Length: 592
Image (cartoon, rainbow, N blue to C red; front, side):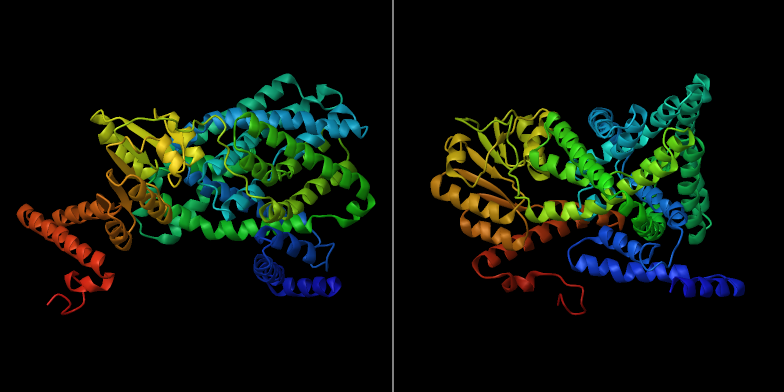
C-alpha cells in the first residue's frame, strides 16, 4: 500500500502539484475527530489516533512526520496569537504575580523533582536535568485546546494555567543558555556568547513591543482604507508569522512572539477582524500539529525500550502532577482546581523537542537518547486526553473549599444583600455611598476572595438556608435584596423569606417578564428585570441619535414604561399572552 501510494505520488508530482497527502490528512481528520468526539473522547485524541494510523507506524501513508510537524507548529503559533488578542495589556499586567510567582514556583519545583528520575535510573546529572526539564515544559497546544474545549480560558482557573504556560515559554531562553553551559568541555560556548544570546532575546522582545505599540495599528488603519479583505488577511498572517520569525531568529519561542503580537493588537479597533481572519488557519494547522504528533510516535523505539519508556512516563507524570498540585495548594487554590490543573498539565510539550535538539547539538545526549526522550514526551501527550476524560468521568465533584472564609454569625445591618455578582455589586454602590450598613453573603468562593482586594467583606452563606438567613441578620434588616444569578435559587430564597420574615421589605432581581410576574405573585416589595432599565436607556440614546426632540423622547419613554407596567399587572393575574394588545410590533397593521 505504501509503495503504491509513493508511486502514485511520484507520478502525480511529475504532472503537477501532488494533492494526495493533503487529501489523506483532511480525510483522516474528518473521519477520526467527529468519531472520537461522538464517543466522548475529545478532538485531540482523535487527531493523535488518526496521525498514528496514517503515519509510518500505521498504514504508512507518510514517512516523514517531522516535516509535517515543522509546518504544523504554525497552528500553535496562531493559537497563541488568538489567545493574545483576548489578553489586553492591563489584564496581562494584572497577571504578573501569577506568571512570575505561581509559574516560577511550579517550573522550579517540577524541575527539581523530575531531574531525580534520571538520577535514580543511573544517568549523569546533566542528562537527567535536560531530560526532566524538557518534560516540565507543558504542551501549550494540548493544554490550551483542552481549556478551550472546557470553556475555561476566560475563567480564573484558566487564566492561571495560561500564566504558567507563559512563564514556561519565557523559561526556554535561560534553559537553552543553561544547556550550552552544561555542554561537555564548556569552553565551546563562551560566557560572552551566552550573555549575547540573552541580550538578543531581550532586544527582540523590546523591538516587537515598540513595533506593536507604534506601527501595527496605523498599518492596519492604512490597509483598511483599501477595503480589500484579502489584503487584511495577508497582513494578519504577516504580523503573526513575522512576530514568530523574529522570536525564532532571536532564539526564543515562536509561540511567544505570536502571543506578544496578539497582546499588542488586543486593544486595536481591528481586533475582531484579525481574529476572524486568523481563526480558519489556526484551526486547520493546530489539527495538523496533533496529526503530526501522532505520526511521530516511533513504535520501533517504543518497543525496543518499552520498559524504560513506561517507567519514565509514569514517573515523570506522577512527579509533575505532585509538583503542580502541591504548588496550587501552596498558593491556596481550591483542591478541585489543583487536581484539574495537574491533569491538564501532566504531559511534556513541544518545546521539549527544541531543548533536546539543543542538547544533542552540544553533546549532552546522543541521537538514540533523543529518540527515547521524544517518545516519552509523545506518549505523555497521547495519554493526556485519556487522563482528562477519566478525571471528568470518575473523579467526584469536589465541593468548593471555604478554608479561610468567614461564615455569618449574628450580623446586624440595615440591608442584607444576597448575591454579590455583577448585579449585586452595582446595587451596593449607592447604598454604601449613603452610609447604609450592608451585610453581604454569597456562595461563590472565588468571587468572595477576589472581592477582598476591592474592599468588600463578604461572608460565605447560602441564602436558601434559614439558619444562614438568621445568622446574616435577616430578622433585623430593614430590607433584603436578593441579587443571585440563578432563577430557581432566587425563587427559593423569596419563598423562605416571605414565610419566615413576612414583614421585611424584599427587593429582588428578576430575569425576565415571566420571572417578574412570579415574584409579584410571591408578594415581593419590588422587583426589576435585570435588563429593563439599561435597555430603555439605550433606546433613549438611540432616539437622540435619530434627532428626535427631547419632549417627544420623554413622552415615548413614559408611555413605554406605562405600557410595560400595565402588561406586568395583567400577566401577574393571567398569563404572558393576555397582554399582547399592549405590545407594539413591526408587522404592518400590528399597532392599529
